[in-house]
Length: 293
Image (cartoon, one colour):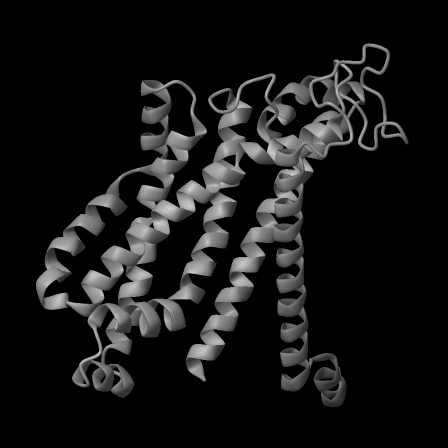
């Protein structure tokens, strides 16, 4: 191939930057759209704004295709799939927020202590973080499921505890750089209270981006764990809807040609987890750009 054709077939550096910028912008918009949709659907389910009663059985409309009466069709006992999908967001939303809250609060506390006073807290907190990090998450989840009745709140509380080391290490690394900045040293030298320096100049100005990234990834993990456990029968139990147990109940009808019963909740899981992950990646890339600048 002639040299000029080889160069013509390769995007230039500017084109690569434009393609990367477009892809990142698309990821941000897609992730924000998914997050906003989940929040709106959750609020509608809490307020009872559902197209049908999710528990009402219509034996005349069993396994019906999507139609004007039932936009996503019905399941094997005639229950509206759209209403059950909307109500299924309650299975992971609040437990996911609990997991994120435990992770961020514990990570912020340990990260600040290890970052601001390393000579005092670095060794004991390092040992504690290594202990938490060494705990096998899957084994702990199975142990909790075996010891307690199926409770997704307890399971995701354990997940939040095991995620503390990652959040604490991110914040500790950021603080170890910030505490050597001139404006931080000047604020401390002028007598500004330490709690105010930590709260405003560290956690608010420089930590909120890290926490937001950790929250989006934590929500994706919470959805994955809740739906997986519900699919296996260890999470939310029938007749309460969960996207996981909807997939499990519909799988027997998949090879009979009634694909939508299990495929629709499976697609909801895929789209939602992917949305939170790409949102976290896009936010992290934006955060790294601002830090480099």
